[in-house]
Amino acid sequence: MSSIVLMIVDVQNELIKNHPYNEKKVIENIKKLILEARKNEHKVIYVRHDDGIGSELEKGTDGWQIYDEIAPDDNEYIIEKEYNSAFHKTELRNYLEEKGITTIILVGLQTEYCMDATLKSAFDYEYKIIIPEDTNSTFDNEYLSGEKLYEFYNYKIWNNRFASVIPMEDTVKILRNN
Image (cartoon, rainbow, N blue to C red; front, side, top):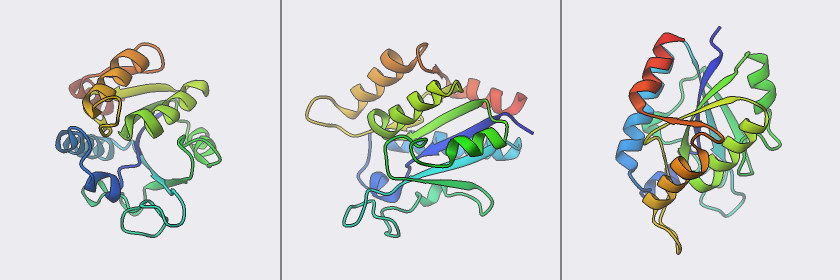
């Protein structure tokens, strides 16, 4: 059994419809990682956010659905969450422990919200976290562009503190060799 999991956070229709920074490259890279993970018998876990009744990410709506280009297979696990961290008030930690997972390859949306909260929770639980370059994204806000947010979190906040931010090619090698 593999001790590595590919975890895809909140890549949902509503968010993709609003065109986050570098969206095409991010989606293509996530698709490559899914293919490699499946081919090499690593678990792929999806995380899906429910923002509540009346929201654009309301459970059961089209916006809430996982983006079809990276949709899970029937046998792949989906964690349903209502908070930024995929660990908070979900069964994720128990699932990872049951499967013997020690390393999380983390990708998805949004960099400064759910990715950041999930990554820091995983760090607190002592998982090894790998962030492949160009596999997470976010949107411009009133303070920073999506690009600047991506660069700031990946290279200033996360890398060599909470995670290893590494090239896609190195991540593919890890999936192939472990």
